[in-house]
Length: 264
Length: 334
Image 1 (spheres, rainbow over the protein chains, first blue to last red):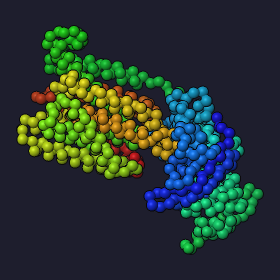
Image 2 (image 1 turned 180 degrees about the horizontal axis):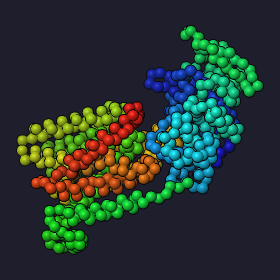
Image 3 (image 1 turned 135 degrees about the vertical axis):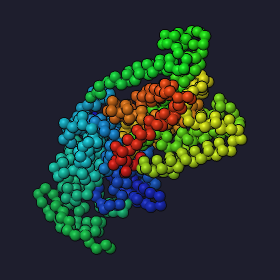
Image 4 (image 1 turned 45 degrees about the vertical axis):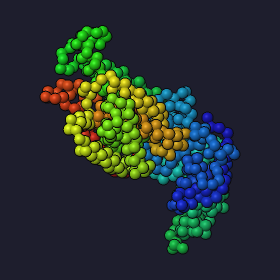
């Protein structure tokens, strides 16, 4: 089951791709119980940061630590139990039954999809239920729509029941109802004590659901904190190059994107 | 949650048993089932010579080599997440043949030397390494197949050069027939020559099973689930190259078993790439043994080469898979 809160931290983290620096000496501390959303324009380094936080990239300098221990020093199986990661637009190679795909989330616990111990089936069924796909268990995953497949893959990440959950664009392919269902789900995971980080593009949804926002621009953190303090008109103009109108509603900020600004 | 245990593996083992028996019985010399079994167990003169020294080695070789081809095909298809992957598509058999031909024609050793499988394995490993180096790690299947085609053609050209430079016409005939792939005139020496390599190759590929399952969701997901992907890749590529090299060294070039076998069993194991391995190996063994029995039954002056038969049956199958899946194949990253 979910372990007690885990603090995930990037310390002076730099990542290079060939000659170009994707992330530059970045510091970020992610606390358990909080839902953090990474925002930034295309190519700002969001996915690179998330993959580095998941321990999938070797940093050029600095480190990512889990409760103080560097991910680079952890055994992959231990890291996999602590951090569940959902890549962007993930694919499924074979027409595996939905249930088998979700059961792959139990691999870090040494549970094979064709022989799950007693705790396994509950985790798998629970994850499928939470994304609204309980009746799809036996369907081939490749025969589903794009949005349904995205929810199957999210259920796979949830089934690990890891204390850290890192998800790359979990709602990009979803209809409005399922966007809300999934964001509620991620927030509930955070409330239950998990450290949850998601990459998103919808500014209003991000402002409404996130406890904290990380605004990323060109490999650097431009702002980090609660949506109200981070999402200001001038900042969004500087980072995204857009003119916005920000309304304060009872449910949170509503950010109306109005026009692209001329390139600087 | 548990998968119903299908009768697939027991069924395949029973099929292999029946085919093995048929393989001991079928041939130019008429020997009945009971007589064949008796000749196998105790010395019964000419019948024992035929069964033990001619039919038993070719039966064992067909089983071993069909098995490793099926296993390699399933392993490579799982690794590259693509149903068209096979050692033949990567030029490995041609490169293995070139390695072996080089050793034979250098005049250093005879055709029954340990140097032969090593040279063939080195050829196969080199071809795979070259394909991967040229195509890059994140190559699409189209790039891989094109690189494999080029490497295979290069190895083929090398073999042709060795043949054309050969001063001895008898040796040329011998090598050409050897290249066509056959189990004819093979002895227990050939079995012993290939067996250790095929066992090692099987172990390497089977040990990669758990990781293959996670790889169905892509490399990043597999790594996030704790799978060591470079090790997984090394196990399967080394296993496939060693198995192909050892096989080509003793029976010549036989293609397409590794491509076909996984397809036949996949629907029975829920398309799980890990659970495909073992049944694909058994199906490969059954397929190649059946093909070897078929060439003995086809009426012709000289025996049809089994490598020719598997290619004649395998290529249309290959085309059928391409036709059926061409839409997905356009953009599938390997």
